[in-house]
Amino acid sequence: MLPGCVPWPAEEADRYRREGYWKGEPLGELLRRGAAEHGDRTALVARGARICYRELDARADDLARGLSALGIARGDRVVVHLPNRPEFVLATFALLRIGALPVYALPAHREREIGHMCAFAGAAAYLTADRYLGHDYRETARKVAALPEVALRHVLVAGDAQEFTALESVESAGRALRDTPLPPPGPSDDAALFLLSGGTTGLPKLIPRTHDDYAYNARAAARVCGFDQDTVYLAALPAAHNFALACPGVLGTLAVGGTVVLPDDPSPQESLRLVAEERVTATALVPSLLALWLDAQEWLPEDLSSLRLVQVGGARPDAATAARVRPVLGCTLQQVFGMAEGLLCLTRPDDPADLVLSCQGRPLSPADEVRVVDGAGEQVPPGAVGELLARGPYTLRGYYRLPEHNARVFAGGWYRTGDLVRRLPDGNLAVEGRVKEVINRAGEKVSAEEVEEHLAAHPAVRQAAVVGESDPVLGERISAFVVVEDGAACPTPGELADFLRARGVAAYKAPDRLAPIPFLPLTAIGKVDRKALPTAAP
Ligand code: OOB
Picture (cartoon, rainbow, N blue to C red):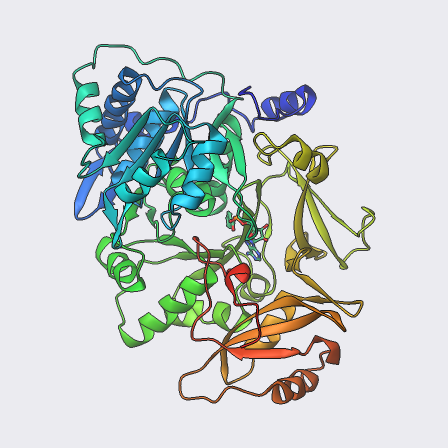
């Protein structure tokens, strides 16, 4: 095991192998198998170019040899900071094949996050693009490489590399070494890659995912979603995020011989155009992006008749938005409640529509174990709200190099998710908020998410974000930021209190403070970034 990572206990690991969850196959083989079975089929579509399985496989090998010749070796960490371009997929397989570990940064990250990741991971290399969406990533590379705590041996750039090493030149150097055998990637139960924790507070933590666990995650998700070689998956979210990478995402699609479409930019216009042009069948969206798709489709309709499945996750969609999927997009909605740490819950494509609208899904694997507990760690009665604990064949046993934090967050192999859920009698989970986003107002506990949902139901309110602010009298007060519908006047706190009361909501949940805001700040993956909301009263 890579030092700093926490293995599963031998007993559980044996069970996961025996029961067929862990197949003992390195993740890099997922594409090798694809190439053997689907050689001429299109694996990737990007910027009008089409790359078949055989070509993608061969190019990944070339890049693997090139990287190896540069001295990048098994166990090295490489921060991968690429937008959704073919190089992302090539670099992923090249690194996996030589046992070097990609550490996936999101395109929206800048030198603060990247510097932290490079330092904390002890990265040997940083791989980025030249420019994307108006940002020059070489500038980021310069700033990061200059940090005293960062010790990069290489900076690789896809595109115009300027003073850095061009990724293309590494691939062509590797092409000249085609007769050289590739070094083996190491045991399949060892860490293969690092994902970032999705927490909206503090700097991201690193989550090691093993070859065995992540391959299972991708394959099982593909199975549950009905992906096959006719699937055309649009990576509308950053492929560096677990949702679009392996739930089933890019890896799940490639595992079954489907086609991955990479948009040039993340705008709904570009995505919807590609759905029509490439006959896309499935995609994954966060609620904020789904709302944009729905609006865009109403004023600039495209032919979406190929679309079968739209996955929505990362945050809970409001009921009204979720209900528009079938009428506006003409396809099945799938709610996905996942986390980079592992556990993935999904509604199933053949679930009744009212069930899909009422919960966030059930665990992916028969081997997933979940518990819903109160503050004392005791299981709550069925149907009551409590904190979700999880363990299973693809849920981490510890964050990378954080033994003290791990001691607090893991007990008996259970990962404390920090999410408040309700378990329905059929095993589905409804997400009710987060432990941390509970506002303690004069002793009353208020879920920020619950208040947001009520505020968003007001006709003048398009979106709302609620945070707790310290208050000399109440301890914490409820502060609401609202985006008002076009042409509507911002409701007053009194009107909102009346509105909430009319909905039968306890009076203590009404916001104490209200501020109109032009748009809600989002995190790198598109969730509402509560910590970026202004905290002082306007
Ligand atoms: C996904 O992963 P992360 O790591 O960015 O964030 C995980 C957290 C969860 O612990 C939960 O608090 C929240 O995001 N979350 C949801 C949700 N899906 C995730 N909260 C409410 N409803 C949902 N459907 O966000 C992620 C990873 C894989 C697949 C999908 C999402």
